[in-house]
Image 1 (cartoon, helix red, strand yellow):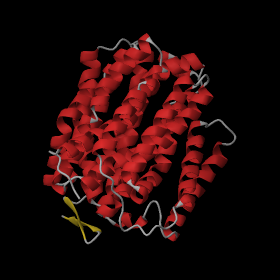
Image 2 (cartoon, one colour):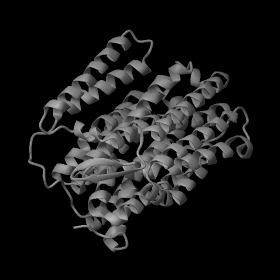
Image 3 (cartoon, helix red, strand yellow):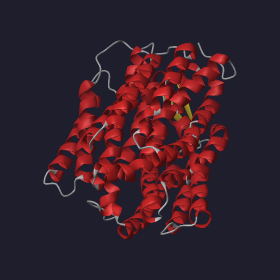
Image 4 (cartoon, helix red, strand yellow):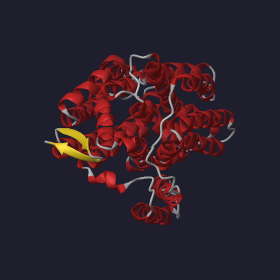
Length: 468
């Protein structure tokens, strides 16, 4: 039974899902700001910093599909609650980690918890709210989640400057308590009622994780003699993953969904766009601190206009996407975001916030606002309701995979290795190359959307169709 957004249950559901997914978003925001301090305190190389980010992203990308499937089978509310609890315990382990190796291990556990809670947050909205309220709710979910993008850099930067990066993980404890309370009180249970109770796709999940791990290792550890064997093993594992998904009765990634052209195109654009977003987030934050000499608080606060734009405009962008279709919001938004990255090339030693940072951040934020909510709503519209958890999981996995691969590959692509990130002159040159690569990825995603997406997306008789 669906509920309306105006009801107490609807507002409580939206608050729980925003806060739950916001925990994961907040953690990602703060960890970027904290990287220079983590590197200095734990004597980490650039590879150590890459693994600090990617140890979290890797299990999230590989297992978020399984998280969506678990929610569809056993209850989206139940798996969401498990994910919140798991994520919180892992956050405490991150906070007390004495070495970079143990921090990386704890971050991997965090990623598993996030894989359980992330698809559930959006699937609960899609499965529980009235159909007329879903587009607006998804826009609000994306926009209000941006509050964490405002509070996170400020609170995180202040905590890191005044206390320690470790406290950035401790703050998840009170947030988790609030999310658990809201979920237990307001969120109804939902599941795939057509599920026949077959076996889970354990082989597919394992092959996906091994494939991404092998490729990530090869991209991060380029000088290791194991890099090429790891890459080959990773590619073979991903090929095996696709083969398994074709054969098993209950695949965690139903390949039939990709028969929908909109579903395939939107996910391809997601891969490219979120790779650009991940690369920009990593390199701009480090550039402002290492080259610009800014504090963690100043660097974290630099992107606040971008998140404010998301907060104010995402609900409206979701409604526009529903009315005119996803093609123009996605393509146009991505091109505007690429122009914003081009402006951010001006950031160098002793940057002026008003001249060098703000114009690029604002333009990037406008583009991001235009495409994020329509992208999310359209990928769910392109899948039948009974696959809402799986469709959400696939899109999240694709987004995280884009970020995973760019964080693994981009430092080597722009000439960073060892402790090079601590040298302002070397990092400054690498930063400029990174911004060019990220802008190019956004342009490619825009062209893909503008040329291959239909004007509208509908689902009829459990099959996604297009309306030109």
